[in-house]
Image 1 (tube, helix red, strand yellow):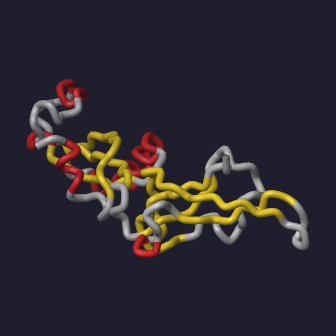
Image 2: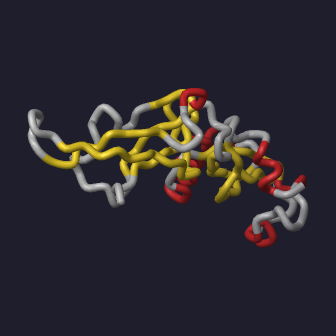
Length: 170
């Protein structure tokens, strides 16, 4: 079984496994060191992930981390894999609105940044957002923009949301 197939059962609904890293731990020590394992995977992956642990001797040759070949083969080893995940377009139950990097500060209304929206309420063309282009409250000029899916995910408590970004209007 391929690593990403193994991970697919463990990632949140509406997502698929993406990148991974691993930590090899002596069997019997994982319970005492799981927080250290999670911290190391967090440093290496830098985004939300799930941990899936396998006995090293149960992994197929193409799934085994190369470092296992250098370790004592008479010792039982566990491999803790950390798998990041990406949204399957249109499959998460939530979307979250974010300003794209190229959108100048102040254009996106603060009430929209980070807004969670149920997927069922998202139009197929994207989420319409009014941007404040210039002027004061009395003479404000607005432009319509559309937040579009990026495939990235964010965790909000137990909710998985696909990130929709609002880009600079053309």
